[in-house]
Amino acid sequence: MVDVILLERVEKLGQMGQIVKVKPGFARNYLLPQKKAMRATKENMAYFDTQRAQLEANNLKRKGEAQEIGVKLEGLTVVLIRQAGESGQLYGSVMARDISDAVTAAGFTVERSQLVLDRPIKTLGMHRVRVMLHPEVGVTVTANVAQSREAAQLQAAGINPLAMREDDERAQPAPEGLAAEPPSA
Image (cartoon, rainbow, N blue to C red; front, side):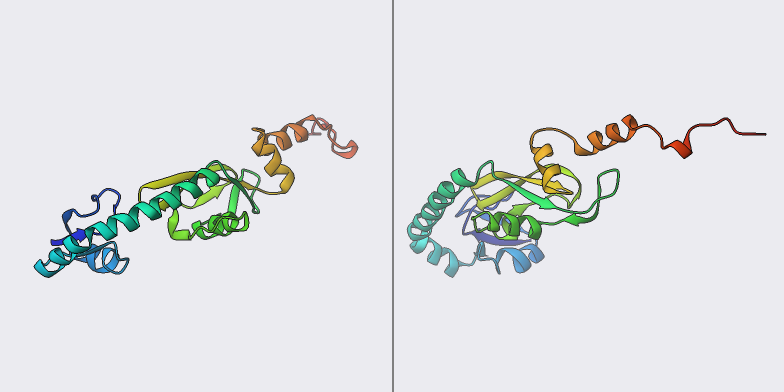
């Protein structure tokens, strides 16, 4: 285990300024390159103590900006048109990059690393996605994954377009040549 000083809040790890023990690979491959932490040596601890006020001020400024953007971004719905099978299963999947591009097209710059997707989206429908604008500020956007713009509008209204299509198919009478005739033995 390696001791590191956190330079910002890290979810499920700790707050800024805390000294925490982490696995060497996590520190080496994520925390240190992302500038989220520094090794807890005597020199670094002294440096952190002298820079603490500046780091906290920068963090508060970034947090304030993130909250302003978050108020505007909260509740945004983006429409993603994808091809899918009869059951609503997508032929591909919607990844963080796709949602990030759609949110950026809607006027907000969001990196795909800011999106929290537990797993790729593989079905049609309305999917809630968490956007972490700052380690302490997260908002939710909705990804409306549909086969067409019309289907997206129906989904937004709370109507399942797949169920409507099945109802329409059941309501239509069978064509003349395919009428149910008893099989001849």
